[in-house]
Length: 336
Ligand code: NAD
Ligand code: UDP
Ligand code: UDP
Image 1: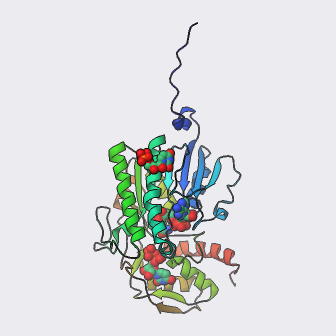
Image 2: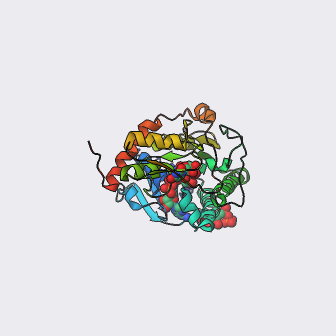
Image 3: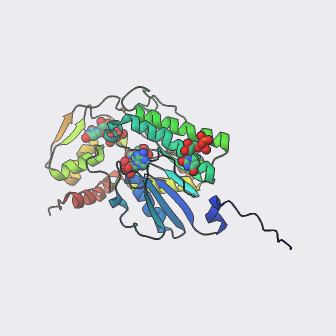
């Protein structure tokens, strides 16, 4: 009996490459704000299959309703602090609450999500040979002493404060990414995301843009936390998604800042929202929380030079788009 020697089967884990078919992409935290917009963009490409793993802590199925039942889409209720077995080519690892109210609600869970969750996704990436992108944060710079913040800045972070579960958690996540890269040769990408806003943000999640827009629509005072001179730079979500995909498909590991360098004080933001959405509302100064960074603005030289990326949507153009979505969800139409 003669045996024909078969070429070795490629690892089933490189499945989609073997069949030259779709790219299979895992998005953790894909039911959340940025994740669901990323899924929308990835699903537009017919070559992509998308799997979302989310525990619905701050996200919801509703954000993904247009894809549920689609043959190229799969939604798994899963907590990333547990082992996950799937076969994919790309992992966008976003799972983590991003709003201070939610990440402070159960800080031990937040740090587990950042550390054990990222370790698990790296273990998965290692097993299947996938490329993995971590959505880190401008919070790794803490209360920055350098302004604007370049990626080379190591930050000024309180390791034992109430925000530490999030910012130190993300710093460890970055360390894990680089250790897996150096030790196991993993293909990694790290995005340092600056404040992002847009439709589908949780209405009552406590972040400043969602708070101000909901307050303006409800006719409540806009709560500017003291001193009001602290700054943030706000990136519209479609620009963010574009930056994340460019980073994933480009050649650079990062970390790369992705954010809009347009910088505003919180008082200026409140004034803009008031003027655009409801000139009748008052602006009220309220107490702040500990360790609030006084300034934040990305240096995006690297993103521009290495990814050819820059944000396109200005704050005053993005706010009305978000207002429209909030009005629909709050059931308060605009009065003409
Ligand atoms: P979000 O809270 O809307 O989304 C996070 C998603 O992760 C939610 O769907 C939530 O249910 C899910 N999740 C949380 N813990 C999980 C766990 N243990 N297992 C599985 N799923 C879990 O937040 P977002 O604004 O979309 O942020 C997405 C990512 O971007 C986060 O990693 C965040 O740290 C990062 N980021 C966001 C901003 C911003 O301004 N939005 C800024 C910097 C960094
Ligand atoms: N892991 C996972 N999915 C996989 C492979 C690994 O969730 O497909 C998790 C696994 O639970 C482990 C972690 O990733 O705890 C780190 O995996 P790695 O292989 O790097 O380390 P080890 O298992 O040897 O500790
Ligand atoms: N902030 C505010 N009013 C609010 C909520 C937040 O003035 O109702 C301020 C907060 O003190 C901080 C800034 O807005 O200086 C951004 O806060 P957010 O929680 O949106 O994001 P992060 O602190 O993570 O950048």
